[in-house]
Image 1 (cartoon, rainbow, N blue to C red):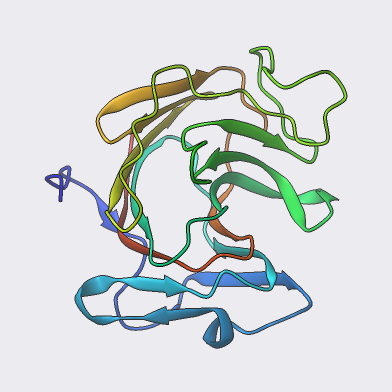
Image 2 (spheres, rainbow, N blue to C red; image 1 turned 135 degrees about the horizontal axis):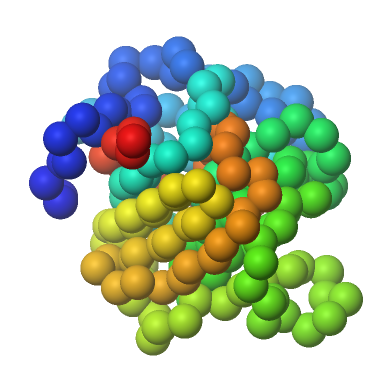
Length: 198
C-alpha cells in the first residue's frame, strides 16, 4: 500500500456504509450489493446496474483507490462529481475514471458531464471516451491496482500504478459526490482515501 498522505480521510469506516447511498435499477439495498470483509476490504457483487456514492460533495482533492478483479475481469469505474440532474440510462452526470479491464485510465463524460479535451471515440459513438495516453499499466487480474486521482479547480489527473494515464481540464461539474459503479462484474476495493486540497 502507498503511504497515506497527511490529512487523508478514509471514505469507508470499515464497519458499515454510513456516509454512502446506493442507486440501482432495479432498486436494491447496500446489503445486497456491497459487503465489508476483514482488513478493510469492500466486496461488490457488481449488480444490479447502478452506483454507490458518498453523501458528501467534494471539490479539490486527491483520491486514492485500490481495486482488483476477484474472478473473471469485467467493467466498472470510479465516478467523480456526481450531481443530480440528467441521467444516461442508470448513469448520473459525472466524470467516470474507467476501471474496465483493458481500458483502465480512460475518462468518460457521463450524461451531461463534459471536459475541454477532444474525445478519442468516434463521433456519435454510444460511449464517449478519452482513452488513456500511456501504455497500459493495469496489474494482472487478481492483483491490486492503485489509482490516484487529483481534482483541482476543474482539472483532473489520473495515475494508475504509478503511471500518469490521463488529464482533462474544464471538467463540468467540477465538484460533487464520489462513487463506484456496478456494471455486472464482482470486484473488491480497499484503501479508499481522500485528501482535501486547499
